[in-house]
Image (cartoon, rainbow, N blue to C red; front, side, top):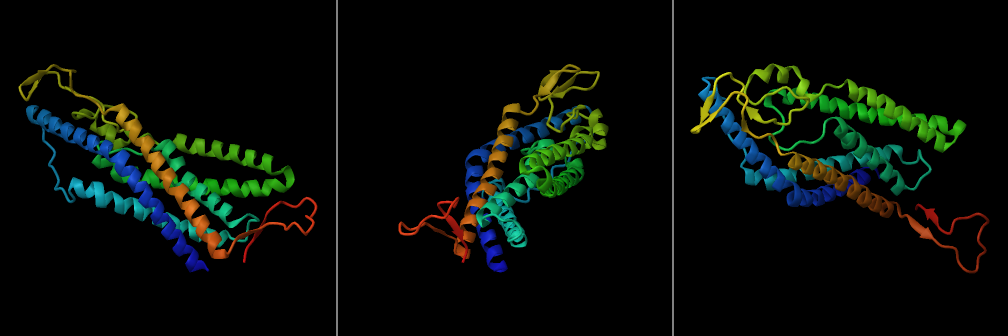
Length: 311
């Protein structure tokens, strides 16, 4: 039963990932193309400014995968692989928790999927939202990855503790009071935690880079307008820029907002379709049927019109 459930969870996740990839390819990929175009233009301007000012320029790394591969096979592999892995983990959690809660298997799966969506994506998104290419510096990628991973782990742990707290309080105060109380406690603790996390723009590496072109002091790594930070004019591509003059615009705020919104929808698709598909497959695997009372038999007092039967 365990292996069959895990297999069905992985298949459900892969199917959810396929739908999410279609959505991302239609809506998000055009935004990614615009972000890459911005990044390439910004890099060219920075190299030209540094060259005009007699500063060292950055070396361009080799392109390991072409953009066409990244936007098709690459993103499909990433999304479908992630969703399949999440489906397998949801199935493992279901196998462990099945029988511990007096709820229908499908409802338990919905609860696990909601837990995963909130802990793995939604709560970390509040502090460190998804960013398209052109946002994020190469020299902070390791630190940013560690901060995000720590936020995911803390979110999952605090969500689990909130559920345990609600179950402990329910016999004494009732489920409504227990859920509200545990939710408030969770929000307070999580709010304190994310308040203590550093803003990406305030990382030491970003603060140290403020003396370079294109790295102004900000609370985020979202590219700000590139200005001439020197006390003397600079000539780039035949144009002269006075001290403090904008040379290249900052990242488009509308593009950033749309990308983050589509990223949120993409994850919602993954976890929703995963819960729907895996729940249906588990019901079928367990032989869940609905038994309706016949017209010849008298209904039991206070009985529901339908009963859940698990073979």
